[in-house]
Length: 49
Image 1 (cartoon, rainbow, N blue to C red):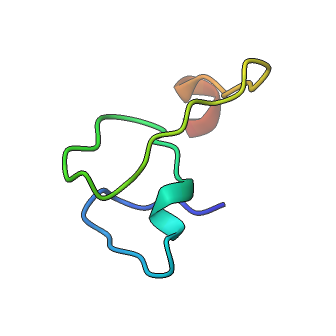
Image 2 (tube, rainbow, N blue to C red):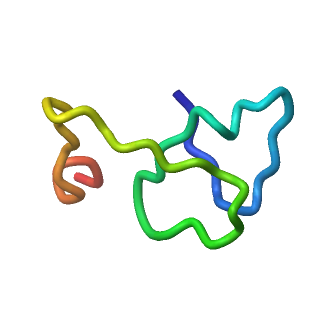
Image 3 (cartoon, one colour):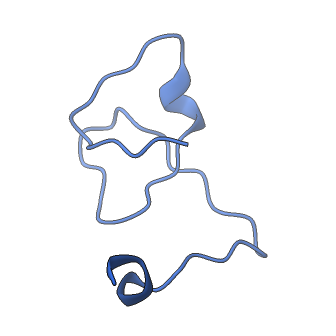
């Protein structure tokens, strides 16, 4: 898993396997596949402590 900013470009179609984690993707470069229903993401406070 890699976390990239929206302005990063990729090769080999890897941008079509992406999920936007935070914020919005306004460039149209990244796909935004929905997380599966059982996916759990940590609260921001938990991650930054």
